[in-house]
Amino acid sequence: QVQLVESGGGLVQPGGSLRLSCAASGFTFSRYLMNWYRQAPGKERELVAAFTSAGGSTNYADSVKSRFTISRDNAKNTVYLQMNSLKPEDTAVYYCSAVAPWGYRAWGQGTQVTVSS
Image (cartoon, rainbow, N blue to C red; front, side, top):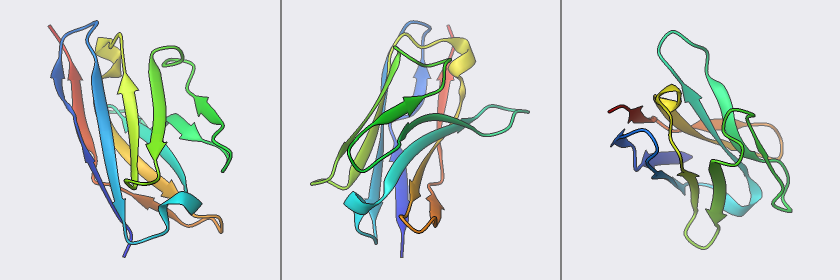
């Protein structure tokens, strides 16, 4: 059974940093493209960062480029999202997603990130 468990969220001041982790189990992690999405109150879920190929190419939302970095450790079945220079508008629930080569998508339960002074 595919399982994704996010961690690392919390309350941080503007300008601060957080690193989110997503631990995966129940599938061949290295074969899946891993993504991070977020959903702020009253807004639609949006893609934040993604691996776009097995070769490791990545894509970021314009709003987070140069501040966020997605990475993965296939040996640990974990994907990370390093978030620097956080802004209040980054406040959201952050979700990890895994996409299989045949299109199947799984979601984690989400982790809250709040950026506030």
